[in-house]
Length: 372
Image (cartoon, rainbow, N blue to C red):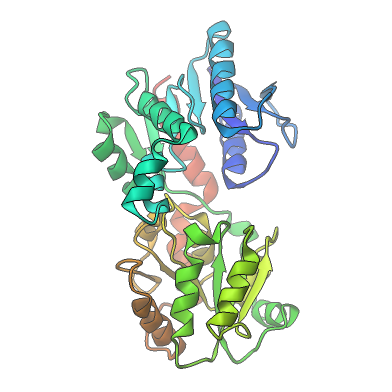
């Protein structure tokens, strides 16, 4: 029986990465492995064959929390012999790592609006710690397998680190098709529930942290559209949501932009929409892109979203850059006026079928256990 440690600093909050870590842990256990999750806080649910070791977190400051969690994991691992240590967080003692957040160096580069701010961000203690830990992970001779969720991230790793490229496996994110579906009446019901117009073309934006996800850029693109027969649905959490509502008003599109904030159930919004747009500044693989495809939606996204790699002809458009809102305006206008070649909803959904969540998780499990 293989002894496996899963490292994820937080699993009590069920975000996308937390759910994925729990799914990986459960999948290893179902293969007959003895699985222990190293974390802080408590697991949200009991899982068969999976133990949880929770370390206390004495500090609320990011820098010290990262160091403390890394230290706690290292001490525990010295006392407990493991065949495989699978990490989802940047900690130093790993044999397997999934770079689900991409590389921090790339994140900082795309996050900072200027080279000067990017340069100074490297002197931030927390950022410096993350960068140094990443280097330890990627250049560690004990590392047996490194998973990325896009070729974009794979290329970043090879470019920025002294890494054996043969260790890298690209496994795209997965989607649960059983939870994403529509019927003939689903769209009408969703439009009525959200009090939207049945005659206007509806675009959907989903993302937390509006700045990084490109909402400012998106609103400016919509403000230049002559054909105003559209509605934009904005779903996601942001501390400065009022700022974006004010921007929509300033741009003269406040009656066509609907802010819904954080939503647990995205199904009504996917159901109501005709097209999904995410002009993100950096996303290793935005899973909402895959969810939108599974719901039969045409996708417009940026060149900095790793999920662009699964878009097939007729299923979406990838922007050339995020420098000119006018280009996005022309694409949106073409979609409204039905001048874009797109496949049917069912054909778009079919394009996402190869990425069913269980099959993608099984790929990671099988590739990992080959090294044990």
